[in-house]
Amino acid sequence: MGRCIMDHGDNWSRYADFCRKSPYAMFPQEHRASPGRLPFHMVTIEQTTDHDFMDPCVPETVIALPLSAEPDNSWEWDMGNGWRRDGAVPGRMLVLPPDNVSRWRVKGARRLLLLTIPTVTVRRILGGAAPDRLTEAFQPLSESTWEDALLTHLMTRLWDGTTGGHVTDRLLVDGALTTLVAQLLQRAGAVAGPMKYVALPTWKLKRIFDYVDANLHEEIDIVALSEVVDLSVRHFSRAFTEEVGETPHRWLMTRRAEKAMELLKRDSMTLAQIAEACGFASQSHFTRVFKQMTGATPKLWCNSAKVS
Image (cartoon, rainbow, N blue to C red):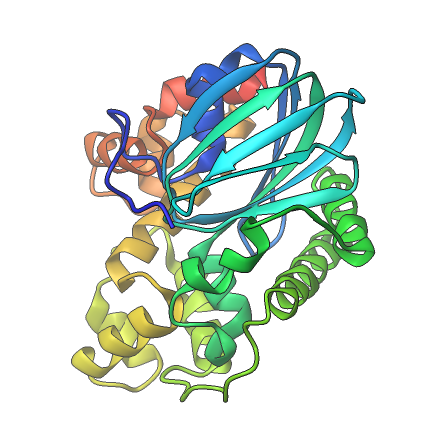
């Protein structure tokens, strides 16, 4: 597989942000984000011309589903194991494993639906069943295109569900994503081995997530998080990183940034107010962390989100 040795001048944490700011920006796009507790992002993109692009590695699993395509459309891709080629047939999808550089040559017009799932979300869903190396686990799904009626249905259901504002919509979206990730793992053949030891069970992770969401506006340190699940700081830090795929600090900063995105979309608070509500030390700290996470300042991100 292609390794994370290239960042094209930016350290991208979200594929959706790369789509907005890379050469892909010339194509019409619509972006939607998860309304539930399991973060993910979706993009429809109208690729209207031939192109030859390099995609950076991001800590996300990306599922590409062609919705429509010209009869003579084709796509070629190289994810580190040599070039492969297939027609972009509606319903035949492809997976871009996380942390993997790829190159794409596309001929003909097509419309794609993309689902990007952060590694932290995949590990939150799978818990102890999560493979140690997601890049290698999903690699079989990147070698050729394939059909899966259940995954196609779940992809379209997730897209429709991102616009719902009711609590039941959020629950349905979380459930659909959980089913999709499990189906994806089974299809990749990554569930043959015995389940590994769960260093931090799901119920303890949920307790941490609930605590953080309830106290996000306050200063939260690793000592407080370890006390929530009655573990030593050393044990907690190691176990959390093993199960979630990120250090507690990195995950907490991501959660603060995600909350900030929600508030930015409402357009009813100043940056200083959002920084305080999300627990950042200052507005400058908020701006610095947000740019590290998204590749854009809060103001630029907000303007881009409004355009999309």
